[in-house]
Amino acid sequence: RAGLHTAGDYLSLVAGYSIQNLGHVLGRLGRDAEARAALEDAEARGAALGDRQLLTGARLYLALLALEDERPAARTAALEPAQRALEGATDAGPFRAIAQAVHA
Image (cartoon, rainbow, N blue to C red; front, side, top):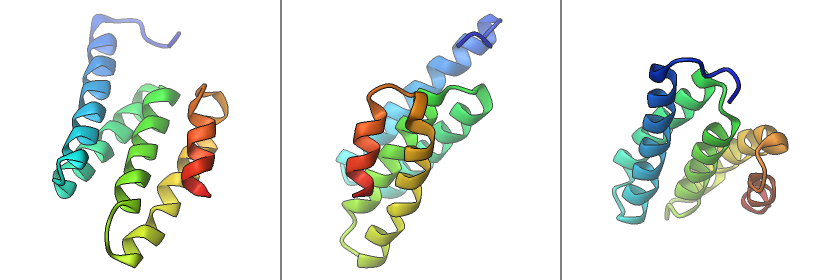
């Protein structure tokens, strides 16, 4: 987070994590389309801010959301965000183990 220099940067980071959490909760409530939109927004914010934890967390939640879909094609589609999460998890703390489990 060394690249964050302004109050706006910090607010953007807080907003990103808030949107990520919102996406996760919406997914748990079965509101998958809204959850996916929020998580994709959080993923984009993580990439823009260079925050690996936000980026990887959003990707993991996207993968978990797809895994819980009843359609086989959607479950297969979960591999893509899980792979992206695994690639980003090398420096994102405990996310690496979770990403490996989701990808398995």
